[in-house]
Length: 419
Image (cartoon, rainbow, N blue to C red):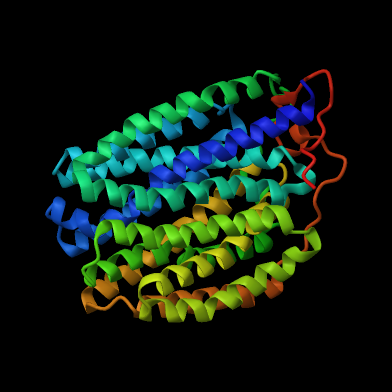
């Protein structure tokens, strides 16, 4: 098998598994207002569980990234999706808030475990076109998130919360379907031990000389995530207050996530490296007025505006992920966990505060003004983002920072030829 073919298979496999993981995660989005009644929760308890979910799925990615950069962790590509599928599918089978919290923690850890490993695998497949490789990987996830809310909303409308258990069978089938592709691609990799003389890099050494650029990427990403994570959840409460069904709520959320997925596809097919800096500041600037208008619209106008806002956010998100990996090329999993995990945790924490304030005030429209301010701030801060240069003439295994992996060990691999 040619090295490029193997790398393409790995990239497709990573994107497909990302689609499954985020489909499962996205299925929870339209159900938050309904869960308060199903589990007899106080309003503050619902916000606390949402905060727990955000922290588990995001901040823990940093620790999985540290583990993956030190030890063999390809198994997380399988265990993470399996845990998320089984646990989230079981939510409707219990009425216990304590059991709900445990389910959210375990499934959240499964989702978090997959992302650093999957992102590092995808980024290493095309080191000279890392933004496009990450766009393909991210697009898989956002496609899953665009399907999940509508699918779960329809399922709950037809079968109630216990109907979510059917998702366990669907998820297991998808994992078994993707298994041959993953094993076939990974069988062309040789696992070799790390050099005994190379001790693990300490975090202090890893960030030395990069503190300001990494911190700025984290802040810019977190501000952008406030809108990316906040729009779907606040839409669910806003539309529930207007007496819309879970299926209708899921449809609007899916429109937003479809826009983000389309943005990832646009980034993967049309983006050129010299456009990246302009995209980083221009897209959040353009989305600001759209976010201000969204809560005052209904029907198809609302769906279209949600899709447009998702599109503008989705174009720039993969570029931020690739910037993080380029700033820390010797530790791609930790870099991915920061830009895809910690940033979501910080942004999600702010969303939890906004949700709590809006629920106490009984109005959810002001939240979208807060989202607009956050995206505007992220656009302004891009002025100080450092320029980075992608690697040239570096193999995928070398650029991944993983000395254990060599594609077709006897032949140096070529990057995936993404045009």
